[in-house]
Image (cartoon, rainbow, N blue to C red; front, side, top):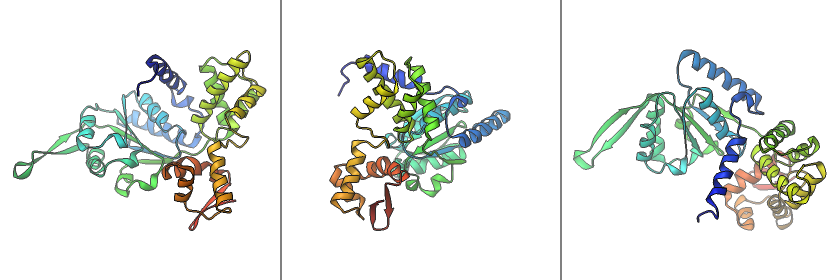
Length: 317
């Protein structure tokens, strides 16, 4: 379905891009990872080489795409962005790889969802910078090896356990991105407010950060909605009272739990007496996909100590 106003859709995308930092030094949080990446970048630039392939894994919204864009910017290279589900055929991959120039980056989001044939085609491309293509069919078929420019693949996944060992072993750096603490999220909220030309009190920024589930994407989304609330109901300046009032209306409590999280806990606690209960039963009760339950809901609930995964199923704590 087409958006009601394509211009508004374009503006939203431009705002999202403007929120992203432009340099690695501007990236807030993940200090150990930033230090590692800074060393790798400086070493590669000194040698005049491309960066080794990098795999980021962790829950959604923690900055994997942003980091990939920052890496390409720091290396002075271009980046192409795609996703595992989008690469359905080896030909799709070949058309992208042959268009890459020396030092370019290819970011593959949800890389664990790559088609098996595409994944195996990627092996030689990552290791030997070559692409084996079969031309024709039957007895007349022949294999052609295409040489590729040296490039860097940055993969991102929310489910690293679904990535095969041969694929994982071809990445020079495999790094987990963890949830952010409230101090870093507060800095992110203040920075985003500045980009959006919105005035926000420190207490209000801390309140939004506290309820952002340790995730920058959620913090920025909550800030935008609180900004709307403050603009309509007051002078547009976000103070603590305005922030709390807006967050209550959005259904986000002091722990950062949403209505969906509370429904999850209600199912386990009341329908199944606190568990154990299988994730398939929870997904059916919530009419949600199992992947959404395991990738979106459960990581934060487990981090907060509200549920546990056991061999027999999920239980409340």
